[in-house]
Length: 296
Image 1 (spheres, rainbow, N blue to C red):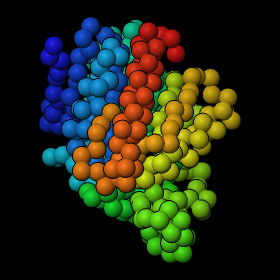
Image 2 (image 1 turned 135 degrees about the vertical axis):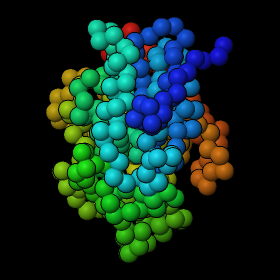
Image 3 (image 1 turned 180 degrees about the vertical axis):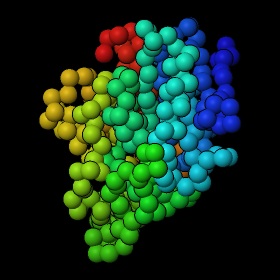
Image 4 (image 1 turned 120 degrees about the vertical axis):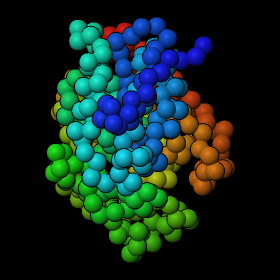
């Protein structure tokens, strides 16, 4: 059966997205946000995999698209207000539920948006960070600029810029036997993270599911998820929250098969990586169904 979709445009609607209608009418919608890959194609691919939960899905592109920024820097948060307004105008208030699914920098964004909008009642953050990092160029390279801005004002961030050199970085590379992007973040995280750069996840008004791989080669997502869980527990977070993790997967903990992956783990253990991806997807679908049915 062909899924009915509706495309939004920057000129007409103020944002670029694709809305997927659930097979049965639903007032529950999950937004999908990706990170440093940019564009919207991967968000659409993930979104289609989430449809079996019985929710509508809105894939959103916010950079590396015509009319939008070509770097992952200074992304205006009010852009996403237009997405929420578009959905609220089409879903009845008395039964409407909005959730977020974000991967990587999109996971960081999902947690940030949920901490600022009490109407978000489910947040799934796949391979997220616990704090706001500096932005990136169009080729995943670090830029010492804010990733997110609010009405033009840059949000405080913890910069990893310049940490891909120096004694600490060399020590971490030698320990693992190969150079990986994660070493830049690990080297930076040997220094304190300012509280103003930490995402205030305790302000989220709904369930939180975190997904991570302990072998993530891009950034230390498992450590980030553990910090998030610890912060939630310290604030006596009243909503369901869980960290679903494994040790045999790359940064791709989402239902996507990496194309031409440079990941050593994906090359050496492709079946185990795919098994964890599928397990993470089933966990996500279970949480989404429970959310749709009012069980979390």
